[in-house]
Image (cartoon, rainbow, N blue to C red; front, top):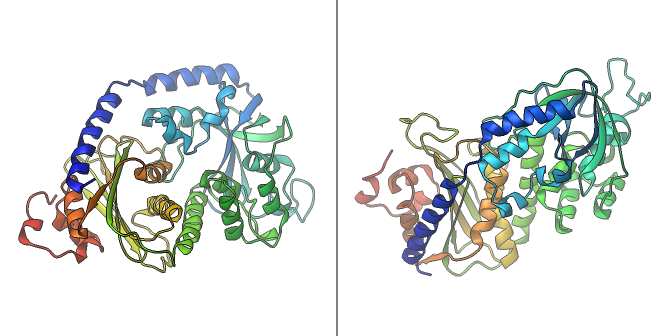
Length: 441
């Protein structure tokens, strides 16, 4: 499909998606009120009996002394699997309000531990009574239950003893990677109500004390485990060399897995033939629009983010469009991306999976437009899934990179001139005076 035809087609598709979205009323405030009533009915002062935990959460505040939590959908145990973040949320077409409802329905029963010593206190004695207790050995007690939940392939029956009255305040951060959580309660202890089912490849990584975490992650990915499963296992301290294993804050584990798998995929296409024509792909989800331009040549990658006034990270209506960008060449990067953070690695993963499946390589420019429809942060998963699915269906083609970028920029809230000043890849285009006029906010 020619680029001009594709752009016209996409405009019509977007209008229909927005019409359907406006017809839905999710009543998030009413949900929060009903959850509080359900929580009061289900949770006693000292225990949550017969709960089901689909996942865990490891905080990063005060690292290496962190808060570790078992997440449980109080009163909705029969739907526990749907509360675990995964690519299935995209397939379901969940809305921002849907995500908030699921996240705020999860009780975070937590307690503090050290990331390396399984909770050894100042006495130097762990919870099992051994002075040698470590994350590597922790399969009993609080940390053991948490790890069993993390490595299981389905939600696990647990009984959690609470210490004090739960805090029904909800925590929703303003970060792309951070996972918003619901009410919190200090946990006294936890026990399993069943023997969790652990997939054989996961058992293999656990049994090998000499396997570096990066190799174990790649092994699991090649055997069909998605990054969502892998980052939970990593977060629980269940990957890596023996006594080097430690708990990893959830936010860090998400980016670590996206980056590690991305590096593996980049290596797999390093000597692959290039694509043979310029392609323009597009997808839009939860108020985020992604344009993916693939250009023949050796691997290069750049993400440019445009955050509209009134969106979650650029709330001032008169602030103008905020721009951020980061890039890499054929050899990748040597340091963490600060400006675009976890979105950089999530979008890169989606592109690399596509090229790996095709057995091709390319230069890649991804433009992300965060509109004011994105009123609440849902997590970096939506970036990953939107880019992964951008390659489904129709796409446009262009004769030159300049034609592709100019066509895309016509649909963006900034001028080509401003894009060229921010983007390393777009800066290579031959410019003319018209590129620097018009929209330049």
